Image 1: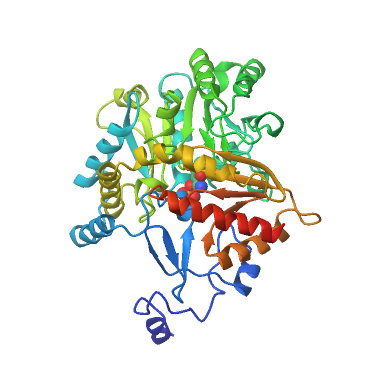
Image 2 (image 1 turned 180 degrees about the vertical axis):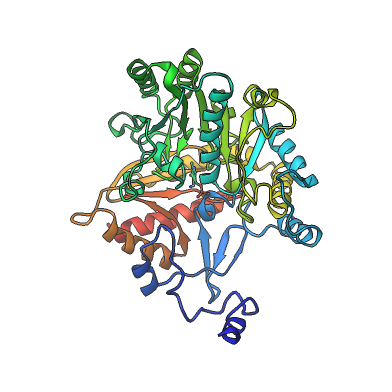
Length: 452
Ligand code: PMP
């Protein structure tokens, strides 16, 4: 069997089709359906993936919202290669390696306000759990240990850890997994099609949805509430931009009651909305920001939490030899991830990626809205370099039946897209050109017509 492993192992070219698809239990995938008609990609460069046969697929979703500067960019590849030859692994419990400190400083420099400290982990899910734990521990540390309630939002996606699915608001991610964390409340979703349909950017309607936090405070008392976590733009549930003024209102209510405000910027961080962080776009400084994805352009897993100075400093007051926060991951600030992160931030700076995204936004929004009259289109939303098209649900089997046809149609068209329920989500790498936006929208239009 070991001989088999060698012949089917690392020495085999990326384009060789594996002879067994059964062993890999694929995440968030209908495995049986996929394995009947596998869609494999084995190479990638800039705006494209390539199938093992060499067919180009336009990347309409930046991998999974992570490849913001485009695929396999040489400076990032080279930095990872070099790092792997320097130190393969270094612990960051009670030891450190220089790149970890360097990267943390660079991220803190990019963040607004006094978000000066970075706790590293390896994914968005871990970042969310880390932020929730820091919130709880902060209140303990400052003598407010009764503050244990966590507030999330309907249709929120915060990864798949137990913390994340508890504060998250996606029923299908919760219903088979038993008891969630207790003491969790949800704000209502900020989406209201009747008042917001076909809006470019943040809708005018809906800032008042933030006032629901007042209702929750009135019900439970502020002294029991630790934190509120929201995405500045709901991503995985179909691109739901928060209404104008909503986040400012949340900030005001949190300040009034001593509640920590966490922005989950796993998607919106690193340029998706035209800024390093969406917090900057909205002029709101949260108490923590979770990030992942775009920090390394997806090339090496990494996530983290930006923490305001006052929160961090509250932990630094006890006896000096005591561990301040009993939390961390073996791979926190992995050397390869740090190298990828530093190279990615350099690339963003050199190519003015965020400015490009900001400048492209109106063109991108107009292009998306041109799909308005395609059959079955119920709504189109855009914000930053992100767009969504809601399609009328298929009769009978909502989502699923339409799904397979859609996935196949996209693959045949040579376009990689995210499908979230009945919503088609467009989040290409931020280096996309106007011509490529045109190509993407044209392909998308053809697919919508095909499956109508
Ligand atoms: N938070 C948000 C807002 C996300 O969009 C995601 C992933 N799409 C996560 C958390 C979880 O990230 P990961 O898949 O890296 O655990």
